[in-house]
Length: 361
Ligand SMILES: NC(=O)c1ccc[n+]([C@@H]2O[C@H](COP(=O)([O-])OP(=O)(O)OC[C@H]3O[C@@H](n4cnc5c(N)ncnc54)[C@H](O)[C@@H]3O)[C@@H](O)[C@H]2O)c1
Ligand SMILES: [Zn+2]
Image (cartoon, rainbow, N blue to C red; front, side, top):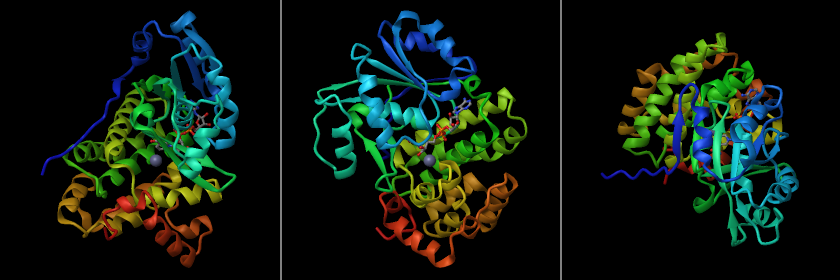
């Protein structure tokens, strides 16, 4: 069997990697998108100093979980700077996905065409585009190496995925654990569990291949070994570096496979209950593992590399999550058995759920 693996994102990683940013930008002009705390943490001043006149504007109010309504307001403000060819997204998945949604340049100069594409699949031509350099400050979503953005639609209670391969792949990703050192403990945990979910979902996935498997196995093992220690010592830069690299590997793995059942189950939990993405897509991992194990001998072999002996792997995964304070039953979140069963049915039919190896093709 041949494998096909493709990822065009140039990555620069390691402690102090942020110093590579001016070189990656070159002589181009950029707009910085970042999260509200970036100013007080000193990142905005640092980037102004590093980039000088090349930094045309800064938008530092980007909130979690970008929504069509918020993106519609931000879009024309960003495109006002039409001489700025590059967007620099310094932040978590929310900032990176917000920036991805700003990349296509619409004929009207408004977000409307992109909203129509997301909501109705309308055919849209984009006469212009911007380019993205992503600097993830969580470890994390892997959005710095994936071609899609999660766009929330609270008005219609839906979650969309913006995926325009010619436009939404980042050009480069700068993964510097120093930008993650002040990340609050709760976000460190949530984003780390999101990365674990990406790794496992890349394995119990119809689109898995030998390269995605190698990345996903390494990522899962490293996250299982690192996250509890980092939870206790959030300032430890070596642990931050290990998690940053593991999350990057998980991102590279699922950039080719996409996610599967645990993610499909997560979206209603976030939309309905406001559960953070990283908890919503990881609290079901033991249950999803139980469904995955025994389906396919080759997948089992790879899962065993990631999780150890499979007979008690779901139980160990449960203990891992509970030790980190994550509840693993739907009932813990106020969802009864019949409602949970209905959510599984719905999730298996969903776009991501169909990637799961436990579903009939
Ligand atoms: N595109 C993809 O491939 C992909 C994959 C997974 C998740 N996502 C999306 O990413 C979003 C979640 O992203 P996330 O988990 O990275 O969290 P986030 O970007 O939503 O950030 C969480 C919180 O942490 C703060 N924060 C971020 N970095 C910080 C830092 N260095 N120091 C202090 N505070 C900081 C933010 O301001 C925010 O309040 C969700 O919307 C999810 O759907 C996208
Ligand atoms: Zn995720």
